[in-house]
Amino acid sequence: MTDWQIEQLIFDWNLEGEVPAYPQGVMITDETLRDGLQSPSIIHPPIQDKVYLLYLMNDLGIDSADIGLPGAGERFKYDVTVLAREIANHRLNIRPNCAARTLEADIIPIVEASQAAGIAIEAAVFIGSSPIRQYAEGWTVEWLQQLTERAVTFAVHHGLPVMFVTEDTTRAHPDTLRRLYQTAIRCGAQRICVADTVGHATPEGTRALIRFIKEVIAETGADVGIDWHGHRDRGLSIPNTLAAIAAGATRVHACALGIGERSGNTPMEVLLVNLNLLGIANRDLSRLPEYCRVVAQTCGAPLPFNYPIVGADAFRTATGVHAAAVVKALEKGNTWLADRVYCSVPASMVGRTQGIEIGPMSGEHNVRYWLKSRNIETHPVYVEKILAAAKRSNQVLPEDEIMRMVVTMRRRLADEALSDQPEASSVERETSNNV
Image 1 (tube, rainbow, N blue to C red):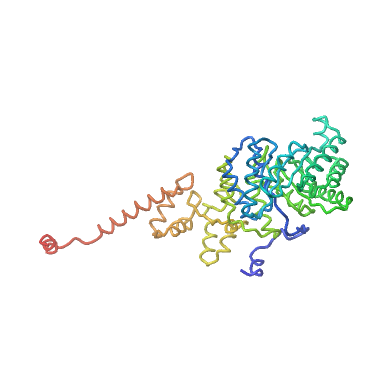
Image 2: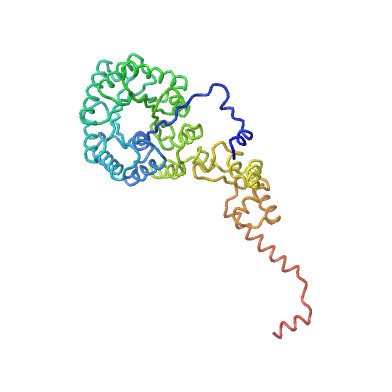
């Protein structure tokens, strides 16, 4: 359809009022294999599944991936090395990074993995920054600044690109952030990361914080990128991430299915779809369901049926009014219309299709579509009996139950057709017997 036709069919209130000027080309970092695995309910996947996920991330156009925290032990260092080698040997378009505390003991395994794989691994060096964390830990800002200086200098000296991360940035004092970030930049950090570690931020707070960080960077005169790392404790991770992008963040972080500590991280699949819908990106998301399926299975993260984008019901209806609209759109030969008439996210964007089921709130359109989609004749008796059964049910009719009804009705109609035929004459019977 043309842009003019689309404008006639959808009045977009999202374009009214103050519309953020989102920049193009924002980068994405996938935190699934590090921060996502910090959830106490998650199963740590075997290395072969991590490798497969890395390829899926690459296919989705994700720019970088946190491939682990090698300082946590030899197992994690091994996995990081394998994943980094996979990226290097197969020239994947995804850049690896690894988390590390501001300790040389955490940075050394990244250096060793980088050298073993023959590829640069960005060190995401993190340190707590908020007053509440300082008070609980007994830290001083001076001590944090010393750790920052030593760690960033050490990583840069060993040839690692550095992203300096302040934990709990969204509850940290401006003076502390200025001191820590400017110290890291002076020591060679190429990126800084603003972290909403406990999911405290609101979109308004996010915008204010990113604008402040831009001022802090400008004071140094350095060309440094800004990352945003959000959690969803208050359910605001997607609005906060979009606010961060609009305010000037050039790279944002997310995890598949939003897995991670407590309520988890920004959900990657929801973020990617919204970036495409907002025109901020144009990634091929056809493998998004597979990416989410693998994470759900290998990490033990079952999907709720109503989960956006990849849940079982995301593009499925059993309601008569909704089904009628979709069917009528399809009868017009307009798949674009059918994909949007009762859905804001086109199923085709993520390699899925609209589904119509039969349940207590269904109408004839549901039944006829269901039968036609399976190449079954839409006999009036079929429609009547199936719909009657659906109205008596308290849930959507399972496919095998509907198919049994179809087989039963088909046999009954066949038997009735035979019984309606006139009896053969005595001559015909005699002839038949002689034969």
